[in-house]
Image (cartoon, rainbow, N blue to C red; front, side, top):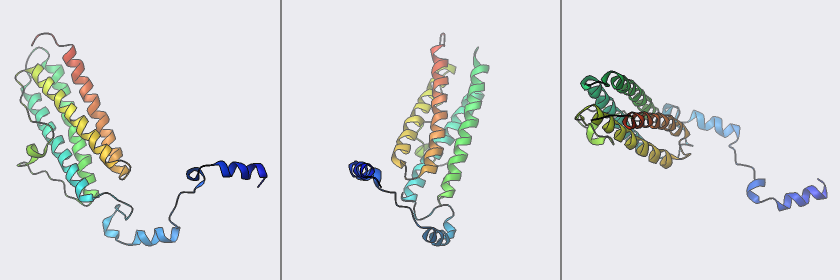
Length: 195
């Protein structure tokens, strides 16, 4: 190493010159053979899985309450704009059910059980099951529910951080769709004429 290179190396902060600690191959292989029954959850998973599963079950309840509310609104929608808005309700119900499926699968991957008990869904849901007095009110209530979902998913993503990147990526995808739903309902309301 030249004198200039040595001098430059001395000026580098410790964090930049330090090599990240990687586990040697032999240890990785030994750890992988231990607790094989846990599937994808290895010793490097640092979050409290029970807490993650509980929070995901609350999100699962929220998604199912949203599916039910959207379907109720789909079947109940009446008025001049009903056909166009009904199509939105049905599409959103299908997408929310897809979210519920992703969340339920992740709960199982984490060693938990999806809680789909109908007796407790609405109590555990962040969003409310609201009927809506008319078509405009239904759109408004669905926008409110999407805004609730956005905040609850964002809080969960921030809480998880980089400690569970698989769950975080899943939730980020769901959050992006919830934001799209909210924008669609906002656009509908902004163009609304009358009650």
